[in-house]
Length: 565
Image (cartoon, rainbow, N blue to C red; front, side, top):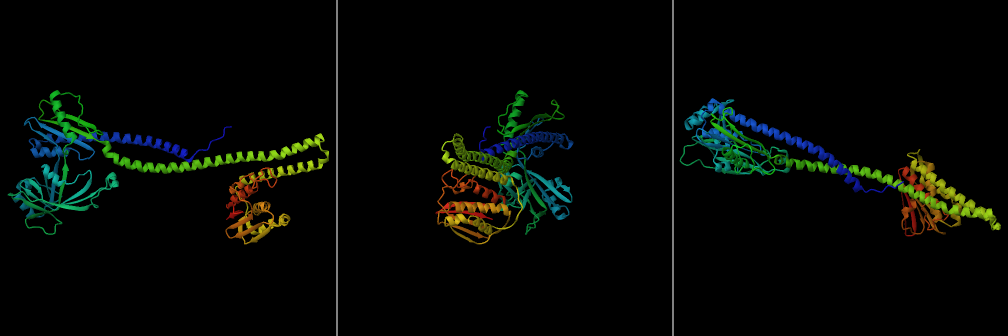
C-alpha cells in the first residue's frame, strides 16, 4: 500500500481558495451579466421613451410654433442626467432650416407664496412676461426659466461632480425681463468618501461650507430681486420666496455623444445608409440607441422635424467602483473562509498522517526491539537441541526465560498503550498524586536502598482522576527516576496545587521529549533490558486522557518530569 504523503497547510488553502473563487466567479459572472443585460435593456427603453415624449410634445397643438428656448429646454430635458449615460439629441426644423441640440442648460425654478399679493403685484409690474408664464401649484407660484450661457453655467456648477458632491444655497437672484441671473450663492462641498461614492449616499447633511460666490445684476437693467425666506435681513425691494432650485440638464460640453450624433446626422443626410461605424464612442461604452425619426408618425414627406438621438451607456463607469468594493469585501471574506476550511482539513489530514506515522514507527520499533530477544532465544534453543555446552543448559534456560519475560512486558505495555489510545473517558475519584508517588517509592525500596538513592517528597496535589490509571502513571515515573538515577543520586518529588514534579539526577539528553515516544529509551543501548521503552509513552497517554499536560526536560544533570493540572 502506497504511503500517503504529508500535505502542507498552504496546499489545502490554495486548493480551497481556488474552488471558492471558481464558484464565486461563476455565480458573480452570471449575476453581473444578467445585471448588465437588464441595465442595457432598461437604458434602451428609457431612450425610446424619451424620444416618444419628445414626439408627443412636438405633436401637441400648443407647440405648433415653439420658441427657440422652448425647444432647447425640451431637448435638454429629454437627455438623461444619469452619469453613466452620455446622451445627445439634435432636432432639425425643416421649415426654418434651424438646428437645435441638447447642449447643457441650467433649469431654474422659483417658488413663492401665492397669498402674498404685494409680491405678485410687484412681479407683474417688474416682469409681466414671467408673471403671465408662472403657474400656480399647491398655493404657490412657480417660475421656471432656462440659463444657457456657458460662462454662467460654470458659475452655477463650480465644482466637478466626478470629484465632489456639493450643495448650492441660492440666497438671492435677479430677474431682468425674462432672464434670471444668480446673485449670492453659498457653496457647501467636500470630497466624497469612497463608501459614499460607491453607495451613492446623500451627503448634503455632511458637506462643509466652502465659499460664497456673489454676482451683481447686469448694469443698466431694471431687475427684480428675489431672496430666500431664511435670509435675516430682507431688503424692501426683494420678493421673499419659499425656495430656489438650480438643476443642470442636457448634454455636457465636449460630450462624445454630441460629437457622434452630429457626425451621424451629416452621414445620414449624405448617404442615407443604415450601416454606420462609430468614431467617438468611449472604449467601455456601448451604443444603446441610434435613431433618425421624422414627424408626424414617421412620415418623411410632410414631416416638419427630423430628430437624431444617440446614447452611450457605460456599464463599467456605473458599476466598476461598486464592483471593486464588493469584490474586495467578498475576496477578504473568501480568504477567511478558505483559511478556516483549509485549517480544518489540514488538521484532519495532519492528525491522520501523524497517526499513520506513529503506527508505522511503533511497528518498526516494536519489530526492532523484539528481534534481539528472539535471536537470543533462537540461539540458546538451538544449543539446547544440539546439546552444545551442556554445562550451560541452566544458564541458557535462564536467558530464554529472561528474554521471554522481556518480550511479554513489551507486548503487555503495547497493549496497554493501545487500550489507552482507544479510551475516550474514564471514571474519576479524588486522588492525591503526592501520596501515589510515596506509595510507588515504597515498592522500589529495595532498589533505593541498594543504590543509596536520597528520596525527598514534599507537598500535596489533589486531583479528580482515575486512581488506577494515575497510580500506573506515577509508578512509571518513579520507576524511570529510580532506574536512571546513579548510585548515591537524588530523587525529588514536589507536589503543589497545580501539579507534581519528579526530578532525579541523570545525564543530559539532546532530545528529552523523544523519550515520551513509544519504545524510546533513555539509555544509549537500544537493546538494553533496563525497560521496555513504553513507560513514559503510557504516562503521557494517561495524562492526556485526564486533560492534564506532561512535560519532560533533561538539563544541568537533572531529568525533570512535570504533570501540570
